[in-house]
Amino acid sequence: MGFPVFDPSRIGSEYATPPSYQAPSSYHSHSFDRHSAPTPSMTHPAPDPPASDTPAADPPPPPPLGRPHRVTRPPPCGTGVTFIHAATDSSFTVSRNWTKKFKLPNSGTAEPEISNSSTPLPLHTGICLKSIEMKAWGIFLLLLCLQAFADAVIGQSQTCPADENASKCDEWEGEFFPGVDKIKYEGPSSKNPLSFKWYNAEEEILGKKMKDWFRFSVAFWHTFRGTGADPFGAPTKYWPWEDGTNSLQMAKRRMRANFEFINKLGVDWWCFHDRDIAPDGETLEKANANLDEVVALAKELQTKGKKKVLWGTAQLFMHPRYMHGAATSSELGAYAYAAAQVKKAIEVTHHLGGENYVFWGGREVSSDVQARFFEAAVAYKKKIGFNGTLLIEPKPQEPTKHQYDWDAATTANFLRKYGLIGEFKLNIECNHATLSGHSCHHELETARINGLLGNIDANTGDPQVGWDTDQFLVDIQEATMIMLSVIRNGGIAPGGFNFDAKLRRESTDVEDLFIAHIIGMDTMARGLRNAAKLIEDGTLSELVRKRYQSFDTEIGAQIEAGKADFDFLEKKAKEWGEPKVASAKQELAEMILHSVL
Image 1: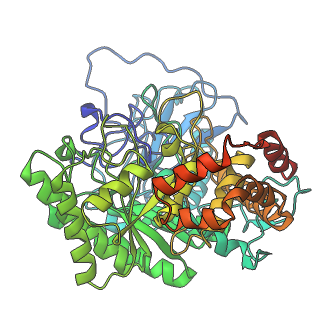
Image 2: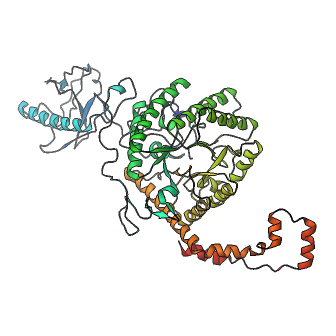
């Protein structure tokens, strides 16, 4: 999971926004690089300029006939439509209330008499009333009004304010991803970027359908709250459905977009953080109520689309209350608040039928109170009848320097120390493996051998960058090694492959969301096909068997059974003399691996 450094100046806004956007006054900053972004700013009616004793200068001549005027996208429900002069970019605004009449004063302005607004709307002096006949001016206004009316009809109900008027606005109508059909498998020869070349959901590999090997999941935070912001730059992504707020109305709209996306992508699972899908509140009770309202919609959409939650979690690292950690905070109040937040997050995950629940301790350090926190989570899970798997996601650093869950081995030891080894499994993120100095395959094998492999966050990091870049995994060799571990594990269920990955900062088109997931899914599908070839061919397995064949003896069996002590082994060493050590054939092993890539 990736996130930017917390900036106190952002308190008061859920996300970084263009300078022209006025953020809500309440604190909403609870997403780590999962922020929503507003649409480009819109022009709203301005008040009349202050009175002046100086006579107004004559306005410039009118625009030439036939010169188009472009109409900006309508502002939020009930306000005006802004016209922009094609030549000068000067503008004036006309209300959507079309039952009005214009007065034509000598000042060169037009003041529409509008029943629902007391603010006169000045006409820019770029529209000259003195140099044209009134009849021509009337025709010109009529044409503008017709164009504005068409624009208003098209744009109606696409944005809603984050205030008491939000409930009066209609929901987004139509598709969130128009022009994108359901993604289909077209095979390796296809040149269609919106198609699968290697992932064929219903195809059987080693006796199991591809979709069942992977159980792919879309991460709500990166996909619908990511803005492209980084520590050095502002957001670059402004999705069409965003209105610049963190209102409940906007949260519900994102949820609808989420389900349209996963349906068109052909994915059955999704993952979430509590504060990514619903806005926080001024109190814990309000935050819970917000979450309940969004979760109710998610439940409805899940049932309709036959989708499921792979895992849920609580965000315990972004809010200032968690600056010292959550389950290891030095402040008892923060510890208690974190417990309450996790309690609610487990409840909604259970309500949505989630099969796992994840703990990611981005600001935690190893301590007894951390273990007590996990014990309380286990107890509450059992109390409410949640049968999902509890997962811990190891990460060595970022944002804190010393975390209790450095890697799979460290986390396994933590669980053993506190008697939790049977209650938790691990969610291995490939980019986190890189940060801890390991390969993803190494971490998966460590978890698998210890019986702790529960889920995979399928992403990768840049080998030349020392932080969590959360890129989509596109390395075929890495994918092949990952799938070898999954096959040896007998699959990954009830876990899956969650794309904890985000678009690059420079990728700003809506279709890029599909393209990124397609290449991620195709890469893992190629890895599965390659791993299956290696297993069916058997050459690599035979090479490994021969390397350890000296243990396929009676004495080797005694050693593996723990029945060969040092005295016995010393006797054998003297009896056998200097051992003959055979070649490991490392290059041959690499040749065999690359023959399937």
